[in-house]
Image (cartoon, rainbow, N blue to C red; front, side, top):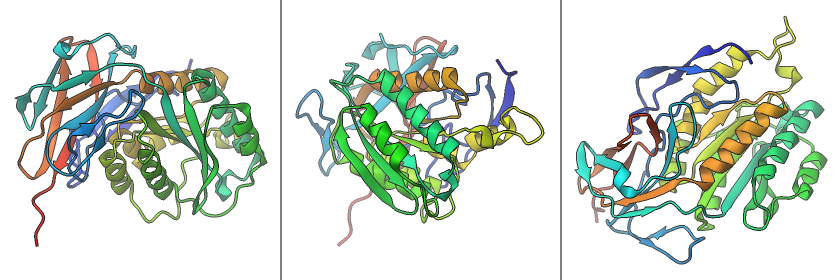
Length: 345
């Protein structure tokens, strides 16, 4: 196990999307694949959400115009990183702009997953070892998914987003399709995440996420990470980013991976984007770390709590503070939501 390193995580705790500025937070990363922090991270919508209309246990609430409820996906872990899945509504306290609000609805059922697998096939991935690494990550993700219940589609991108495989069960056929593709062109990672999130939201799936596999480069996006996080948050789609690490990413002066470079990437714009949407970022090296990262992503999605409350009426940004009674718990949830003012004629 590598020694613990320090990484700077810029402005995602108590983050205000109105200006995308927050305090620097110093965090410790004791395992390379591990998330930089378990702090609350999901930003809310850039538009107002309203009362959900439930259609089936596997269908996510859909929202109509108006003011009624805000739904929040919540992950709880201990300070040691173990996910806590046996809490009830009475274990939570919710504060909206500093004001305590009652929880109107609470769910903790482990529903099937719907995942958009977004794979970087831009020119920077045009090396066999990187493509093989991406396929290996996908294999580990599928290991923790349930073929008869979960669904996944395969999206690839360079400067454009393309669907290679529509929603289907996770299988080796998808991995074969990945290996047959040939990278080309510039990288629009941020744009691809935004578009993938919109498409996934349209499915109405209950537990959903975009899982992006990339070497982390972006040289052609029109959108900024802040704008993408706002889009993904408004449609309640967390984004998990797994950095594809290969021998090419090793420090030229040694045989080890360049950890400072990976730490900087995880603490930078890419990491901020993931955490602001309620997801996270990983940089696994080797089968053991890749398996651990894949397991954490899938089990976390499957066991999120869903909490609903009545929003405040004041237009603008409403910060949310979710807590549990146990001080050993670390709660990760959207950090707030927007209320839009009345439309003008």
